[in-house]
Image (cartoon, rainbow, N blue to C red; front, side):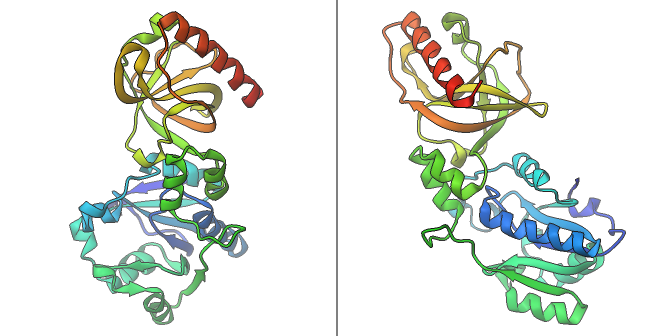
Length: 309
């Protein structure tokens, strides 16, 4: 998969393409339905499959006060999309200038001239352009003028008839309901971020941890101890996470600490992705570091059973 960051770095594609456009925060099942349709059509017609997304989230620029916490940073989003099999991803820098681009200019300059769109696949609520003047009907009309097809995908619904949304996923994660979130996401909930220096409590407990700083605030689930997998250099490694404060050491700031089983190398400065599989227990204050260490040993044993490690 080729990723292009910035319109200014996008060259005209060598052949026509099937295109989809959206924020795709979380890359949930509704998004995946659209993306897979793009890939399927592109393969049928021997064309490029292209996904256009934005960074930062458009609402952050258009209405900062209403900007939601994100589920997936642009790096994590691109990684998830790559696993689906898209040929090209174009990441557009969404700033005030781009926000004011008329819908007809977006169609002509980007979809037609740069991406050579033969077909555009979007969700039924799709809007674009200055003041969201472009919608599905506008796109269909433009398609007639520029000779590209428009395919509108209905909103994806769960078995109980409920619509999928990033807001619903955020709420499930806040409640620690990983299994329900996974059903909507179509993949394990993931946290990603840079590993930063911690407080050194790993030396006290005997369990080395990587401390993650993330911009994906909405992806952080209910406080607790979790079993999961750390993804490092394309390798999946069993892990136990502490998400929340460290009351045993009188530290009440919420942190994400990851103990990767059978791995004790420094990861400071590295980008780390962690898949969340199961919540093991709540955060609690222990009498001392020795008691905490004994509990961590139990947590690891339970995680091994869950993760078949």
